[in-house]
Amino acid sequence: MTIHRGGTPHQPKYQRLAADLRRRIESGEWADGGRLPVETELEGQYGVARNTVRLAVDALVNEGRVVRVQGKGTYLRQPSRHDHRVHARPARRGPLTPSGEVYAAEAEAAGRQLTVDFEVAAVRARRDIAAWLGLRPEDTVMMRRQLCRVDQEPYAIEESHYRAGLAAGTPLMQDRPVPGGDERILAELGRTETAATDHLTARMPNPAEAAWFGLGPGVPLLVNTRISSDRRGPIRVVETRYAADRARLLYELGEGAPAVG
Figure: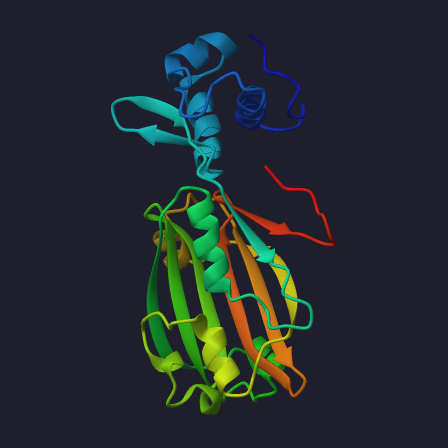
């Protein structure tokens, strides 16, 4: 077998081999969880050296497409993609839908188990978060972190940033779930979230994030930053980070938007 034209002639041979293996994976040649041919088989199929095969497979491992199992071989990574509706439709002129309710409903609908661990800390505001909240970069904000797992697999890190004075003395300072969600506490404080702006970006994880998610070195994060407000101005900044290899973010616009399968 010759190396398919998935790569370019100017690329190193291992990159062209990796491109052809991607093509075969995407064509469905190996089912989810199926085993790729062993290195000696790939050497024979492509007429290349063992090191070329190893480098090509390394590239696929780094992309999160395949995993090596010691003593057994290399397998397609079984996707465990989980859908999240980032922009849930609120009731007309009503408050935004609590994100915790959305996560729980989605997991239940998919027949999966959602678990959440909470952490709370006073932190120095990042420059961008300070600007969104109308603070100085050195000001302190209260950060409420939720570590979300779906079927025990790390799925998302959600961090809500509040002005310190707003959160002080409220259940928002507790490292456990709040009945009715953080949104209920904000409403009781007279700050009902009725509008939000989302910023969706992608970046590579830092070492701590990669370790918590269990990511390969080539898998990025999807980062959704939501700035919520009421008529008085901004209330909080929520930054949620998802592993790109296991999350799909859905935005539904307009009435009767088609369901996504």
